[in-house]
Length: 291
Image (cartoon, rainbow, N blue to C red):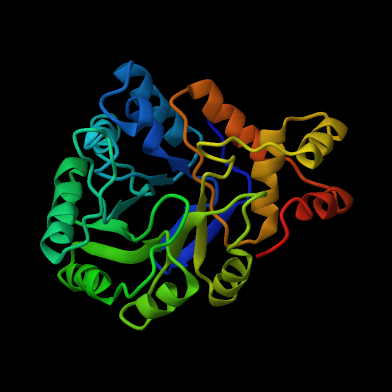
């Protein structure tokens, strides 16, 4: 499937970094629970080919997906990379032998992680590296100055083009900005989980991208009578409504829904193109009051 227009258009994160607001999250290219290889590697490669064919130029990945699996598949499927493609990775965690996600934010761990991402992706420099700080569902408290400074040093060395942060609070974003420019924030956010409402707006005012993970609820899929009602009235699915709400919520929001299925990828793109009427947005905005 080829297309020249994706839902939401594009967003300029930096003068040399304009991405489609509809991106792709590579997490699901790994095995169950983001651990081990996929059941069908050929299907995973086909999905990545479809991502490019659809016009998506923004892929979110990490060496700790698998671990290593998604980056290896991306390199196998897409190298040599199209000039327009931008790869975004994250560091700050490892995978243990039980599939856990222990933190890995010591300076030597971060340096190794960046070099490992470069090697497996086959790159000389990575477009964006996010520092992951907290757990999936909550930021970790405290200063992030030391680990973020390590990434800023790697940026000065030319190994990273731009920096971002993930699973952080507003104070940590400001602290990171005092060290080096931040082009994106990647946090848990969706139509029913809106703790970051003020942060989304603040970042929009600064021209900084906000990238919500778990846009459809993640490990606990979205369940809402209001959401289901809007979907029914618009003759569509709750998933389509939830994705479209995010794109209409703020122009700095980028979507990275993941899938291991070409059909599902096409559905995600089509779903996000839905235009929600104002009266339905008012109903949806009431699902979770800003915290």
